[in-house]
Length: 176
Image (cartoon, rainbow, N blue to C red; front, side, top):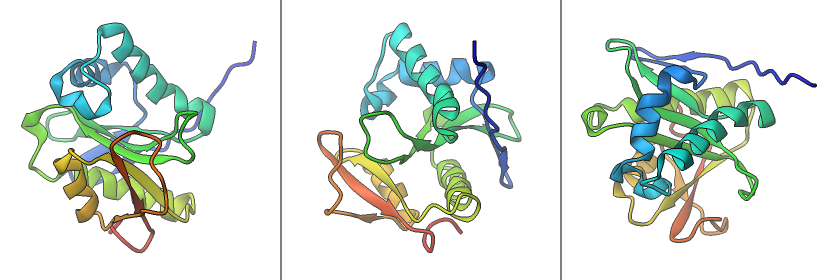
């Protein structure tokens, strides 16, 4: 039996710690995926489907060497979201993705702060030339965040998900 291991570097901002997703995040992430808030992530999901999605987020680190980070607010020590590259087999390239676990964490700039930290890591540490986000045309909050991060709609890059536009993030934008 081969044991898979991955080095998952923690990232830190003034208010957040971004770290490997794990059991401490299960309640918050499953709660999100099982709620109406997950409508743009394939939800709401039943418990088994939601757990499988969380397992895929965690397992991607082993398969690809990169993945989504659990986003933990330092002050409360609560898991407030996830952010990072998501790359299932049917995506042509990694997607910069994010989610905020509950409405109580919205409107504070936490998602932007987390995404900026991840983008800095992807561009400065991993030397990625760009990363995309596939955003549902009806997801106004994510579209607004992509705009604030400096991403541009890339009509030349088709999205692998129905009703989505592809946004392109470049190193010179949004990661500051």
